[in-house]
Image (cartoon, rainbow, N blue to C red; front, side):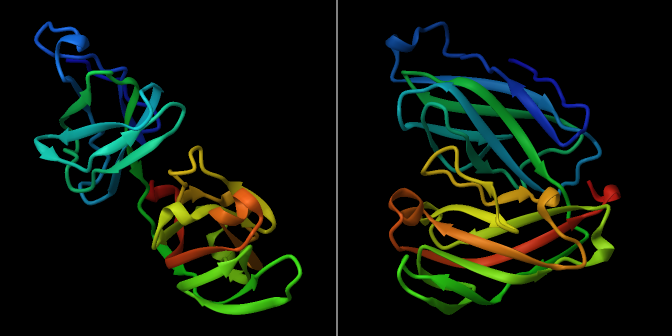
Length: 253
């Protein structure tokens, strides 16, 4: 068993580089390798918070399938490949203030990398972004309009009147996207600054701290870029189920 260290800020715990436990067999002798790790989660965490297990592979055969079990509960399988970050929803299965046991079943090629439990901070308030977005269909077309949540096809969609209250100043501001198909999404921009792009075409980031780019008490612009447009600058589809801007006050973390 390998116990990981805990980051001082209490926002995540790591299993470190977990070691294989396969009854002394070498990976070549068996169809699968079983990894076992344990870590204590901080007592300051909340049982009903949002948790994810993040995989940061150093080496893995392209699209190696991992089966993930946390504290006896089977979570979603995850396909990992080199130099990409992957996350599995662990909400409801993290033991707060106790030792957590993780089992990973990998193909015989094995897995090498970090495994982390992430806690997303609790929001004290939230604003749902919805309504009219301007859509640039092609380079030569004018702007059309679409209501989101919903679906659009084009190079990008932008909303220029996202209000962030002045009372939120001093707090952290996060964006959370719920998309119909994450593989259709590439990146977003706040106030004409690209905030993030995926580390893997198949694993876009849909939750992030956007505080540095926010203008408090003023209209903010939010731009959504479909994957197809990012790859070839041709119109692409993007289905948006929900967009939420969250406030995390200093005492809410």
